[in-house]
Length: 214
Image (tube, rainbow, N blue to C red; front, side, top):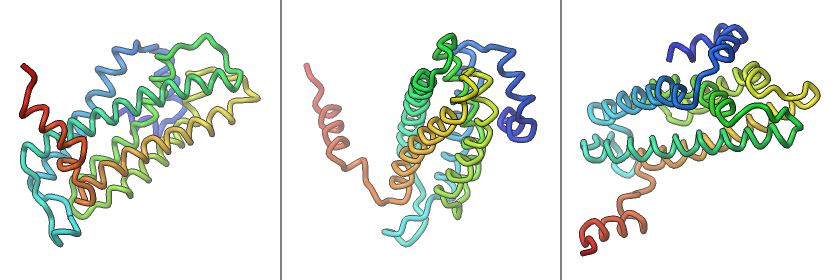
């Protein structure tokens, strides 16, 4: 979370330090991405337990059970992880499309996406508040994320100068749409608009768990 603040307020200097350290995929995953996901999931879970979330169908705040919280946070974490991995792949492919140098690896695009998403995860610390609109925290967070990527992408992906802005804009669109899709899915569940537990997939999973194969 501290790194997110440094990227927002120091910008170029913070990105330069990230490039110089040349972290491995495992290091970025374990020491930056996982702590962000665990901290935000833990705090949000506490908020869901103690304050609940407003659900229009109930006309009141719903306080989630421990089972519901664990299921939701695990599902949300998986969605976020898949989103980041896919975004990193797409950003790398965009770098090739825009005639970027092919010397950088998937690790570099993964690093750019993970650190780029830092402000969005930082804003999610406000999600536990019962009156907080989940779309507001996402929108402000993703706007901050896109803004700091302006300095980060050229340093990590080394695009040709003539194509740098095109790569930045295309990558920004990918991150905006992917994170927005995840936010819509999670917000619909918390608001009670969609009952995933009784959906087609949820019912089939319960049948499989209740009737295991011999």
